[in-house]
Length: 287
Picture 1: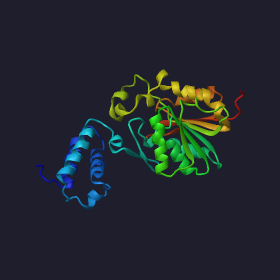
Picture 2: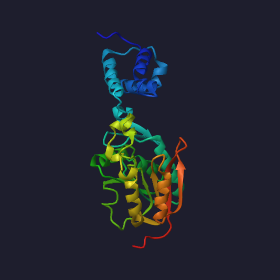
Picture 3: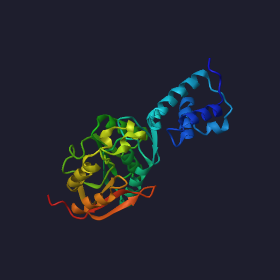
Picture 4: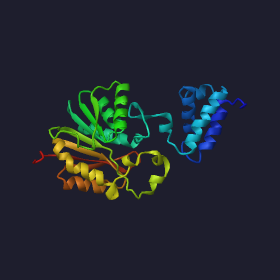
């Protein structure tokens, strides 16, 4: 029989177990135990002396072992906070990250007028599309993803937050869109990691789908493809905007300028790295 353990003691022991694989060991332990007890983490500060049942300790240990193997907290919990939303996540998609909120912020700076048409390429959980849809309720947002399970996931996230101005379809980039489709803004957080990057074997990304992470040509292949195709689907004065790697801003700016985009600029993330680059299509595509 397992000896009863207080919440504070259990969290302390769990934090010790996780400290070698996580920079936020105590928070990770709190989130996992909160999942087991179906409480918020604030509960632990109010009732640290409460004891866990044998069943609760067993369930907590199962989750801890998964985290000890490096599995991301978001996949274990099945959810991740992004912008103002609590989103369902799964291993079929990337985990939404705080730096991607910089892309949402940058997008909002160019969405000045009402009733905009917005396209999110490689939508995954729908994080970017849904964040923009909540901030621009009179706009229409379309999210596309190659993976059918990701499209279903994004639809569930829209439904759970009762977001009616965002819809999602399966498509490899623009392939399933009619050429008559025109957007004021196209955003994307595409695969941008070099296949040889050693970070692919480290941390959370070991568990994330490589198809959503890796692109050829030093991580720029999908960005190049999107830039080539985007003018067909942008309105005059429309913007194209990417999240990209910390060291890719100069290359992405060059690609946009070569493709005829104007007002090309980059925006820094919370760590001071150039993370988002955008350009404006000042003239209609000649075709």
